[in-house]
Length: 337
Image 1 (spheres, rainbow, N blue to C red):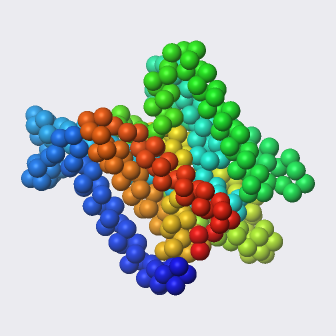
Image 2: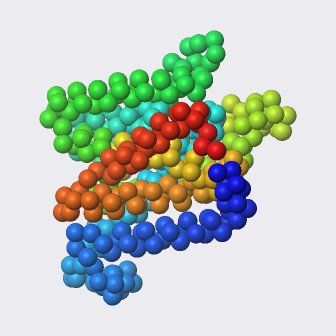
Image 3: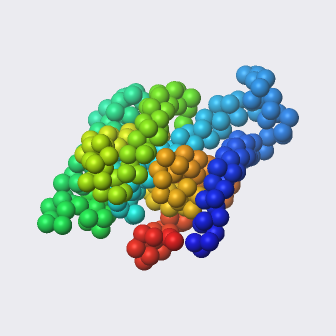
């Protein structure tokens, strides 16, 4: 496996272009195929000569295109936030879902659904960020209540506990306010209802967080060598961790606000992309962004095609892959190589 890994890293930018090509093909297939198959000619006309009177054009432009772009945004956000979390905590099992961050954002959404049902999408985003932030603070506080500090295992256990608590509170609110259908949708993960209006609100946050993740990628790489090394190179470790934690909060909060609570994307993708990019975060972040988008686009397409016209939540599709991967990674001590 190490020989294969070395070969992939030798031609890593060729590998990156191949992944980008795969993503473009996956987007095209996802937009064209579904409960109604769109002829190739109609598909191109809808993209470049849109006719609002044409029903198939409306299906592509108003439903499928925002959905697949939402999948790209969600996949990239979850994968990059997972990679950053693994980098700043030195925890190979870190993932915004497994660490309870997604559950915190989802609990915030449950409060919005219950007490402010008419709230706009801006409010939903802000509450998602707040819920994710509260989760991060609580998890770090709990995991540091030991002489050994916030070890990887303590972070995972604290995250699992907080996640279970927040999911239970979300379900309690759902029962009290008759919101079971809404909360179930957000807990299982789904992007079928995404609209252009939601994307217009989310994209600026997404682009800013992704650009900052790229800017701070080299600093995250340096943290792997310890705080003393980082300080000797003129870096401020605590400042880096604070800023990167805010980026994780924004990216995971965005993903939950759009698709609900989805786990394992941030765990699977960074580890797989290390086969191509190695441990250099300056290269790993772009690979992870493309890989995360590709995984979620394919998972959402599979969820639509498993049992048409009914849909399987794509979060369940990813969990089918993610749970065995998590068990394997845990048994290997967080090292695939």
